[in-house]
Length: 158
Image 1: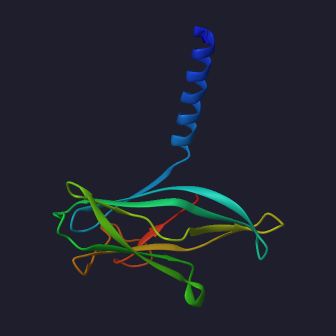
Image 2: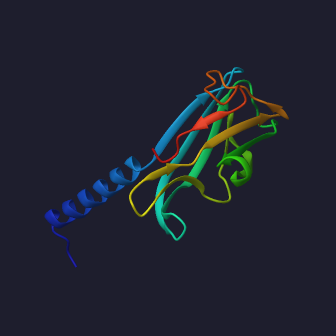
């Protein structure tokens, strides 16, 4: 079966548009530690029905990538992702694995809550914090916000 050039062009164009749209769905947050480590959080958001709140948006998939600051393939690196506050806080410790060069990567085993939308349309944002440990040393945020030097405040879902 022959495929006309016009049909082939249409198929290729549709795929290119879909691929571009998918790439644009990814969101990114970048941080730097005082020791020069770069942290990049890459994620997409998904919204699901939630009986308790109306709808819940989560960051899924979510990848944590770190580079620089003198880390090497022999470094032991983990990140703790904390969503929520007080007794409702959920903590996930993510062991980052060496990918190549000085890059480590990993993702949490469960989605990170971003925010809830109640049935009346009100949005309630979930606090999200990342903590990074390299060779059992907690890293400090080069630009700490309101939550202290050891925390990297995230805005997942925005």
